[in-house]
Length: 233
Length: 118
Image 1 (tube, each protein chain N blue to C red):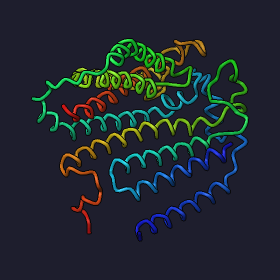
Image 2 (image 1 turned 60 degrees about the vertical axis):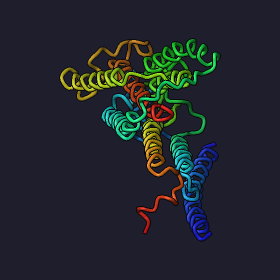
Image 3 (image 1 turned 180 degrees about the vertical axis):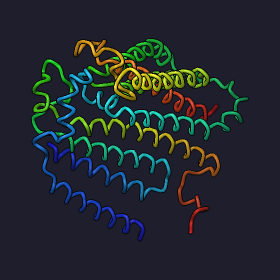
């Protein structure tokens, strides 16, 4: 009772702070300095139609490298934490709860479509809303569907690890190429910027984002596989 | 519009924190944290919104020349994209540890974990 009262008081105080913030907030009518810089310079400097992509992959590319590293660490730690459980129970894999006919047939139809959709989203990341992280999440949803339709399926951890490390390696290599042939680390102008708004434009952004997409897809898949291998396996 | 989105975000944060502080089941606490996380993201996106402007993608509708007068601030959107991905990583880590705790103790009730209690 005392606990609940304390929590309520605390949240009321926090709510008052939030209300004060909300009442004192006036929306900007102009872009601020950094926003205006990105809006005016993205088209000729980076060549990407999607300004958010230009910020994530090129202007703040180093942050994205850090973000991908955090995801990699998460996937590794989950694999490490859940590892011993897998080994203990591997003997009783024989139990068969096959999923329904509808789910298994439907997933055979849907999985290739989902994979193509994911690839489309990360290849077009510099033109449309979307990009490597979104495409990677879509690809991981195909893995999730495979796991749902056949819970006993075993994915090759080695294959996921190979895709993940190769795409990470190429991401860093393309970034390093920017130091030698363009303005700096992760500079996208190692390739020509191309015609604004076409698929092969914005220099190295589509390539970098494709590798990010593969890497994120592999990392999410490895998390899902690690989590699914703990239950009734 | 901005105020509605922001108020929604703040309410989601408060709801999430209330759930995380009052529930004793670890899974419910994890879900509460994801709700609070969503609230933070909604508030951040709302900060970048400006009335009457459109998404920061240059195409036939928004030409390069008038971009700075027509688009909303792209920086909060890039930040929130990062925040969503990191939030997913944190959630999956919490779930993995919750599973591990369940395996060791056989329960998900936080009151039963008394090792660090004082």
